[in-house]
Image (cartoon, rainbow, N blue to C red):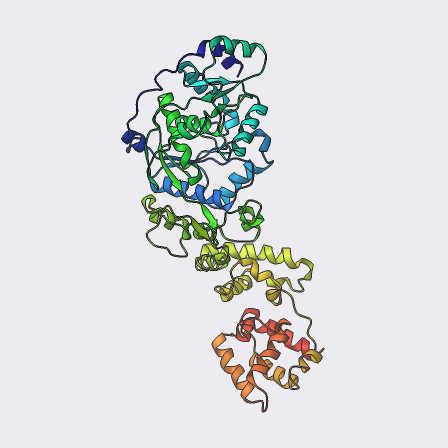
Length: 523
């Protein structure tokens, strides 16, 4: 900033031509179609990554991978007063968890670094100097108090607040006098001339005559940090960004950015503004809702593919609207021209069903199933710990059998350590008296079921057990089959509801079923 201040006296001059002229067609096409695709996700670390940000990052990632390009993470941390500790790390952690890691980032580095705007201040100063020298920018000495009064006056008159461009035409002498008084000026960009039309890849042809509705915007604050408008233009240029895929809230600012590109003599990238991600009732996703942050879904044991699937399923950009797409399928099927202007309505109540589909897919793959076995073993240890009467329940073959039998019935692996499934890992405290309230024929039923399990290495199947248990019920005069099933369910699990009794018995295995029934009889 000090260098800029020294040059201000020489830089105050009538505005020259703002870079080379740019035709509307050129403004719309931006980069050379044959150039490498480079896209960026540029969040501000003023909060942890949320679903809206994840969706923007995902669209950038799959667009880059579909075109054999590069996906860049850039942190826009120029608003130092609003930075949240740990947010920068969280953003990159969550992208890696989701399976969409950046090719270049603060953590990974890369040829266009540094990737934090607070470390790129010299580039913004150089661009600002260029704009000052051409007359496209000027120093503004207006105090925060004056700007606040302008805002209040406009609101009182039911007008949109805008800067009145008071400092735009200060003479060289006036600038020198104000600099001598000490306050460091902000630098504003001169909004003049017709804004170039541009063809957004989602919203089509656009032109926003910003000079008619806005005052000249600040591009460099008095502390030497840039505002978003300057920083994103400078960074996208120096990082070789070919396509900017960002939220539709920035659509109206694009004409302003194109004027900056024009003033600097740079070729702009192509733009695609993504419609907003909203709640299913059309209300805005709020960061105050704790359950929109990605880390919430990590802690709740949802699968990355399920989350990526639901945030793309509710929007557009694909030929078909189907559930169960994996990341490679999203990349293959993605078509930017299919993104519509309609907001995407997200129904998170459907997420468990999405997760169930993706969990079944993992179970069907032997390698991934082995990983699930290890994860479930850890969950059982963590949940039950010292309550485990028999550590044989941690045997990989047993854990795998549980996963295979329960697939399609559970939405998350974590469900298998819920109270409803605790009988799989710990023995219930059930006595003869409790079972006697269900049927007076507890002894008879128990002994007949034990008879089914006689012999070492008895192999149980659900079909065989369903048939044999039906025969047991038919041999008990005055006792309904449903009563027999209820009694066995309580004896084996301590619960009145749960999976079919035959599945319970197959899950536990003949040896464990015998021990649980014998324990009841001896109580």
